[in-house]
Amino acid sequence: MTGRIGIVGGSGVYDLSGIEDLREERFGTPFGKPSDSYFTGKLEGVPVAFFPRHGRGHRFSPSEINYRANICGFKMLGCDAILSASAVGSLKEAYAPRHVVVPDQFLDRTRHRADTFFTDGVVAHVSLADPVCPAASSALADASRAGGLTVHAGGTYVCMEGPQFSTRAESNLYRTWGADVIGMTNLTEARLAREAEMCYATLAFITDYDCWHDEEEDVSVEAVVKVLRDNALAARRVMREAIRRLDPQRACGCRNALANAILTDPKTITEAARLRLKPIAGKYL
Image (cartoon, rainbow, N blue to C red; front, side, top):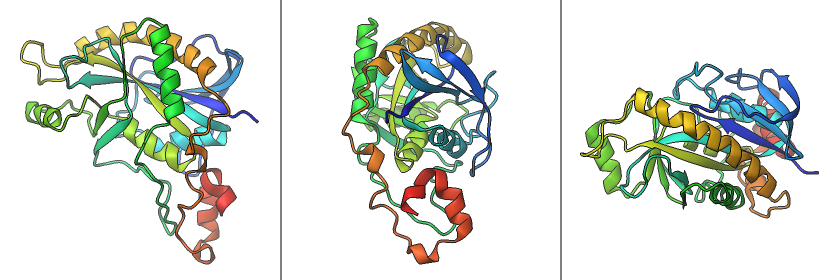
């Protein structure tokens, strides 16, 4: 059976028009309440679930988002892949505002968020060497090219805590590391999607040059919002095309990430832990 595709809307992308048989679904998860409702239906004939990570009206900062609930909700809706849209700052001259990056690596600079489902008596170690799904990434990159966008396939995304933008010293440090873009959300989603055995890839729209660029204005909300308006339209077009291109029979390994990852002796796992993890790892527990 073909799984549903989850779509995460980021800054500036709070809806995805064109979903047929649209249904709003609001529910809780064993990890708390998601940021908003999920909107299910079909897009290009494919079952989908759209979700605004910050909530409609952009009510939750990157540090306040309940990432575990958001990702668990997709799993509970039968999703086996997540395509994400997000806004990022560029750390390289050649990666200009309004370009698109489909990153394949991350650097973690977060500090205040829960980023694993496996706590309180259950330990699992999934591989995150390649943190995004190659099949989903290819679908996003190809769809972006088909839409006439300037695309950078691959690259390293620095995931900072936020909600403040970087200091100039931080921005220049990340450039010495060879990183390409900086954002505040995607790595946490990628970690949890891998634990939940869902393919994950992100479409990162560059809105600014962060604050390292001497000849550009420092990043500001006003500048970001201006670019976001154009990006939102492009994101909708690309997501529709990417959904059509994503092979339901992809052999990427993401959907078996937990097969040998849980180390805890099953005899020691409590019933409460089994119930909490049922949507994520029920077939292994």
